[in-house]
Image (cartoon, rainbow, N blue to C red; front, side, top):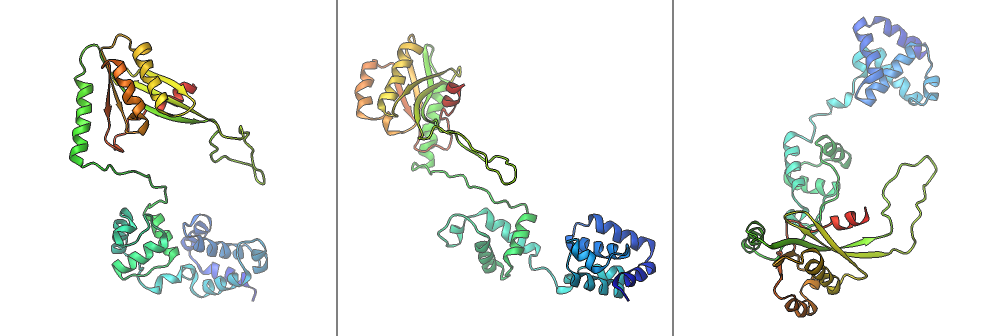
Length: 316
C-alpha cells in the first residue's frame, strides 16, 4: 500500500482532537523537529507522495517513510521525540547555578592566564566543578536559555593609590567646588584628539552589493584643550597642532585673559597627563601671579570628569 494511503487510513482512526493537534503543530509548534513530522503527516493526508514531499525541500524520502511507519504504528504518540527517553538532562539546576557563578568571575579565578571565557573553557571548568561533562552545542543552548550574552568587556585601569588616599583626594576636590569663595572659578580641564577620517560602522546593504564611503585618505588630527565651568557649565577651548604643554598653557592664558579676566583665582581640576606638569608649565605658573591653581585627580580615577564634549560642541 502506498504511504499516503496508509497515513489516510490511520488518520481516519484518530479523534477530532488528535487531528486538530497535528494540524496545529504542523503550523506553529515551537519544536522544529515535531513541526516537521506533523507537516509530513498532514501532507500525506492531503494525498502527496513521499517523492513530492522530498522535492518540496521539507525533508528526505527516507525521513518521510520513517515518520509514516511511526505514525501508522502509534498514531499521534508516534510523532513525539523519542530522545526524551534517554534519561535525565545533564544540565541540571545545580549545573546552571554553578555556570552562573563561574561566568560572573574570570578564568584567572580558576588558574588560567586568559581574562575572557570561551565555551570550551566553560565546559572544562564546569566539568571540574560539577563532574558533569556536556557538549559544546549543549553549552551554547544553555547560555542562550539563561540569557548569558557574548559582549565586549569594558577595559579599565586600576588606580595605584590606596582607596583611603584616593577618597581623601576626591573629597578635597569636592570641597573646592562646594566651598568656592566669591570671585573665584573652578573648571574641569582636559584635552581631546579629533580624527577627521570618519568612523565607519555597520550598515545595511542589498544582496551582493557593498557600499562605499568616501574618506579623506590619510587621516588628519586636530587637538583641542577645553575647560568646563563646574558651576555654570560654560565651555572654553583652544585649538593646537599638537597636544603638548604649549596647548595646555594656551588654554590657561585664555582662561585668565579672555574668559575670566576679573576672577581672583581659577581652580583647575585635571588629570595627571605629563603635559600638565612639565618644566614649561612650572616656569609659566609663577607668571600667572597666583591666579591659577592646579588640582590633580588621583591617577586613573574611577569617576570620569573628562571633557569629551569639547569635540562635539566645537564641531556643531
